[in-house]
Image (cartoon, rainbow, N blue to C red; front, top):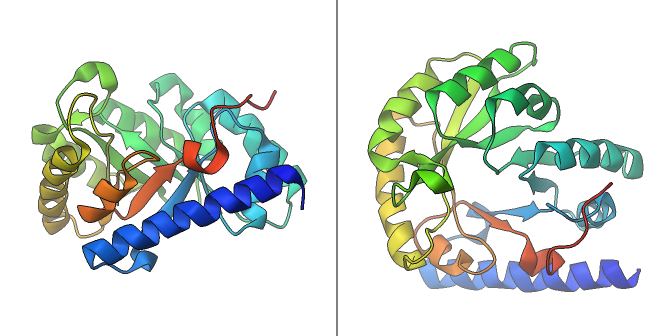
Length: 236
């Protein structure tokens, strides 16, 4: 095992223990919380190491970087079957490219973006999985759909045969206690799931606040720094 592989393996063990401990404290089963490895700005070789370690849910937030890394990983690990997630803000002019590599888009925050994704996904053999990105504090500068508009957006998405509504994603706002933010988000998520039973995913919690997220029902934590360290150099 290379030094880098050993480093990532040790970090992964630490992150999994944090998730397990958070689940124990919340009275939840650790198998109900999925680890999404955020590989943005790190090379495809790191993604390959994660795949070797059994981490096959990989996330990116920039289409240009992700598309290259997607192709590189196929060459590095042709037998691996990773599932790629788009978690960053997405412009409509990038959707056709994103649909080529992403299995799931977690950042749908408008009907116009949903329509663009649906059009780009027409030739896919199966619908594109999507999560609605919620804005917990309603600040448009950070992206996301205001909590009060999520029902309308969900109803719009569910009407598209090219999209499959899977749940909600959010980031704890700056200046707000994560526990308070995730408590608010969880309430909205429960309401949405009651209306749309397929929307079971609650994607919240990152390296610094995954414990609070798990305590409030997160089913998917998006972890980058705690797994891979400080932001590295992107693949060329």
